Length: 336
Image 1 (cartoon, rainbow, N blue to C red):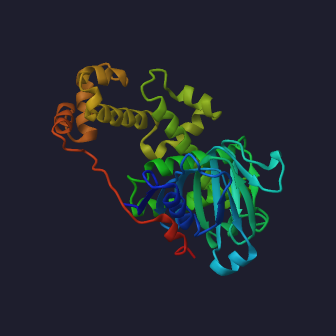
Image 2: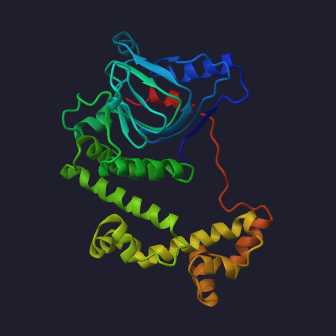
Image 3: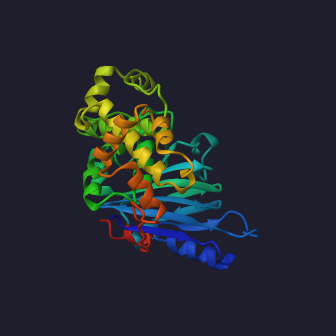
């Protein structure tokens, strides 16, 4: 499994919470709270180490973030930090409103260059990338510090969707998965920053398009109207392009059926849904013939639906939770 870290200052005094946060973020920035924390201070950080990339979420209070030339010389970090502020905003302290992020926008920090940034109370998603991995893919690689890239850009939206999916899947992915995802992630990030897909970045864009479609399928898995035509229309692509994207998964129909079977498995193992019969769960996910569902479920899952439900009721978790205690901030210094 991937290295995993959680920092949550809940239960600490204001002084202890502030100190814990500033010690952690102090790996990259000198910070100062913008308002006195009279009503308490809280910071929540969760991160995964994807091989040579770090991906984390953060939620905390309004503050400033600084990197002076002296600080840069002292810590010698040579990374690019890509951030999506999903709540709140950030921007240059000396900049105008048009230079501040809106939800969905991409904020770029070049940690080898000075920073003077102010943020409101916020929640964000962060990707830390060693410069040596990303800048060979960039046009004008030294000109992106403190840039805001609009979330209206299709490539920026794809990158955000891709990073969300990586973060949500972090606890299920292996080190081998992380290795496989490294280049597509770098290529898509470069395409979003450049504003176009260079030839070497196109595979990453294709991979991310598939990921966005896969997440759309997951969200609409119980919709009987889910079809090749409906999905192609949502993403503005041809049926032929959609079929091509799903060739490695034995086709679109096969992929959708497997996702529906997995959704049924999760529902059967969910204690909150024990009042529903197997037939009700199957029908809710598009399986109207009980015998066909039973055969497909056993073939794909490796056990019957009733066996899955029985194991869950006995408390035998089908996917055991994984926890780790390493602090992801300390990993940043190891990325060179």
